[in-house]
Length: 230
Image (cartoon, rainbow, N blue to C red; front, side):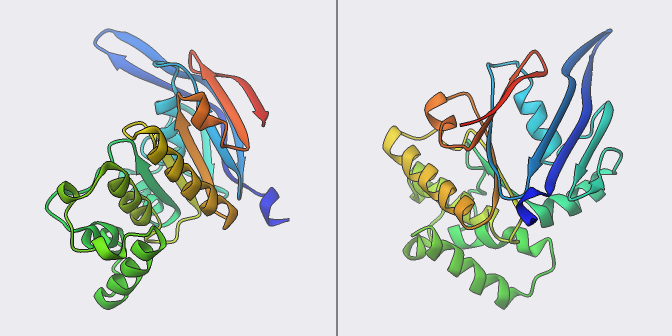
């Protein structure tokens, strides 16, 4: 069954940062399997290692020790350019602070990931309009981020995350800068993407947000301390 195949697998992953003369361990031997089509929440207190774990899963960094597999491919020792290529094709990112480029319109922000994959301009534009329509912002395509509310900016970010039709959506505190109602709307959108077959990996410290996931991975002191289905 396709859903049973691990799309991401971490084997005894350790990450140690060198701070002057001191080694600071951020991850202490994390092993984790994420199946295709899952919706999981990575939770834990500040400083627990969840952001470092997100960076590993998102191909933003490589481990000091251990192995990480994405779609069966070992990415542990990849170069930055190799990681960037995989990120661009396999993973869509949604960040707490939206990370939209202020000088670009909503449509230009959404289509930017396709530029890096050398997609034809007409194809980019057509798909960008479709994605803005998907998140209910087709009438805001020419607006810049400063002309959009926080919730609208996050919806643009979700549309952008889908630009290259990634298998995995990585959402880092996706409701952190939003009011409660808007946060709920964003979670409805992520759940719909999950129902449509996307693998959703969400990092959050908020239990009310985490409960939307189908599995919660709790991390503390750089280690997985619980891993259970809701």
